[in-house]
Image 1 (cartoon, rainbow, N blue to C red):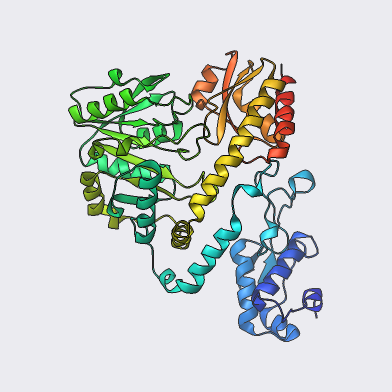
Image 2 (cartoon, one colour):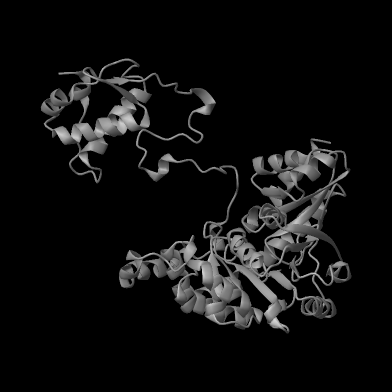
Amino acid sequence: MSKLTLLFQRDDNSKLPLYMQLYGYIKAEITNGHITAGERLPAIRRAAKDLSLSLTTIEMAYSQLLVEGYVISKPQSGYYVTDILIREGKDKGKGSLSSDPFKLSAYSFDSENLIYDPSCFDFIKWKKAASRVFTEYAHMLFFGSDPQGEAVLRYEISKYAYSSRGVVCTPDQIVIGAGTQQLTTHLSRIMRKMPINNICTETPGYLPIQKILEDTGFAITKIPVDDDGIQVDKLPTNIPSAVYVSPNNQFPTGAVMPIARRYQLLNWAKDNNSYIIEDDYDSELRYFGKPIPALQGLWDNSRVVYLGSFSSTLFPAIRISYMVLPEDMAGIFHSFKQDYTQTCSKAEQLTLALFMEEGHYLKGIKRMRNLYSQKLAVCIKSINTHGKGFVTAVNTNSGLNIILMVETGEHAHVLCKRARESGAYVEAITSEREISQDLDSSSKALAFYYSRIPLEQLDEVIKKVIDSWTQLK
């Protein structure tokens, strides 16, 4: 009897099938060096006899090892262990797995240094809604999701968007997708069919969306922003176009578009047979005064595409976003929607629908506003105390982040890396190309995400981040 078959112990109480138990044991013996490269595994019949297992069980375990490259098969000879390089030292463990690849605890958190606040979301209520889906509506999970999104969730969104943001629509105009960027792909196809070939974007503005629009072949016209948002008088005329704007919290300046300019923008769209793409990100999280109504519901909404997302108000791992299309665009989407499959989990869509129906979503936003406004106040005070003219904060009225202006000639990505090492998530606003061109600039603009840091730790984290930046001066 070989040492392999001598030492393996089956666990009849384990949820793992026998072949996976044997596979996991052999894999562990290979990776820890107890079975060395070139060593021959026991023949299938011999292993089956010695371990009192079926031939099929042994064959399946060996086949899994073969597929993953732990062994090779030599015709008329058997299975032999391959030469595997196992990294030792500091590289081992970070991102590596334990000997049991089926335990969630075996996986490392890819942002281990980042600090997070569990009180940001009521997971207990979410779990209860999810439990209802799996107990009362399990039959619905045997079928794929509607490419447009689950009807019950679209209905809840239509009610919520009207009551909270003044968005006027029917569920049939709503399209659900996994993130705003994925929805932009649908929107690009719709605009191509209209046809619209020119897209105007805010400068500075949200770069990922601009990149998607560029990659899908649109001609991009960059329009500057001022203290009131995008400069409407610089938009093209007599050319059917679309303009991507964030009127309620322009990124990264934080500009809020006043009512006069909003009507000016709507008139531009109507007069030039053009459309407005309104990204209403973070709109619910406004901490001073009431949330500003959406542009879509202000006037002629036949010219406005409204984009909304739940990632900020639920938790980031939930990638559920939606867009509200004008009726003519909705008709175009219906003509090709069957070409796509839904990218959002059906179970999560149904859970969110119940979560909203039971009122938990609205209550969560109210609680979030209160918590985040406290965090923002602490954040501003801390930056003013520790920044000392080196770091200043702008755009401090809403959302999940504030913009920091850092007076340094250091590369923006170095500052972001130092912040992560201190437990905070900080993101460079400019693109890679703009960063390289602006390397010697005396001021860097960074988005500092304060909302996920526990209130009682905010001052300490900010001081630590600023101290790490000061060391670079």
